[in-house]
Image (cartoon, rainbow, N blue to C red; front, side, top):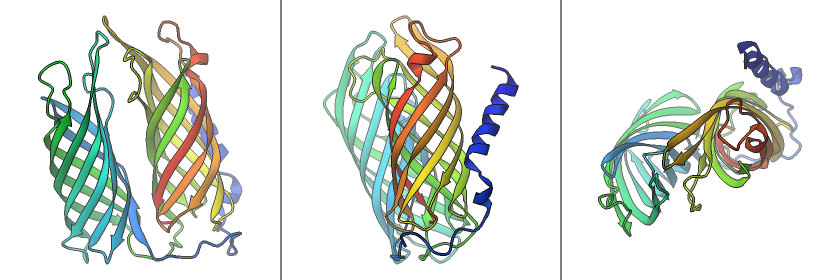
Length: 354
């Protein structure tokens, strides 16, 4: 595909989600008012470099939500999972999170934190053998966060994951998932109480999609970060990867893609707001075989429609549907643009200064 075609697709995405009316201030009279509850908190993406079973791996995820109490104490839920393929090893866990901020008054926040963990560890071999174990753990850590704007902080974290597996992963030697962890986190939310009236703010989301890929039902997760203007329209970046927690065939087609996102929210100030979005992305699909990994590039355009429900000033729940239009020019054997395209059901947790 030529560069002019890519450029045209990106301009189309931006044009669809930035109508002229979006540049106006939102209406002063909401259809269904969302009264301020005074609850502060945040969510956000976190990327971790860690040591898992004698190998270095990348973990993605972060706080699904964090409630802040008196600016010092915070509690919530955390989610993390291996990104990509750590040589056939997959690890995912969810658990409670607690934090205590020792310096709440300044722009730099030093916190003592801990994450409880329960989840699944899976190991696939090129020959198709799969072993699975339950993962339990706790992760004490320290965090240093910097205020970068009223609705966003950037944090560096250092921790150690104390982990045990209820079972043994084959081949022999992959027994323990304990190890050191270094992380980079973007916290997006409402840190000071009240509802924002600024013209723009940062907003993020965790997104789960149930879709079809290569003729099979597939689970994808991911999300993104965007700049939102007047709490009405936004531009940003986002992406998704397939997960294989419940399948018995490691040779199935998997994939991932990321790119530019745009969206528009209707009914400013309403509790339930219709929402439309568009993703224009590049990525790829792959298949693990005894002979080696097969990969192919993929171009994706994915429109989405749905609605968002306001829970607090920093948290919304969104649901809807999308259709992935994929172009696979040099595809895997037996696959095509038609088999890599498909509908998706979408559920998202969104966080920001709403």
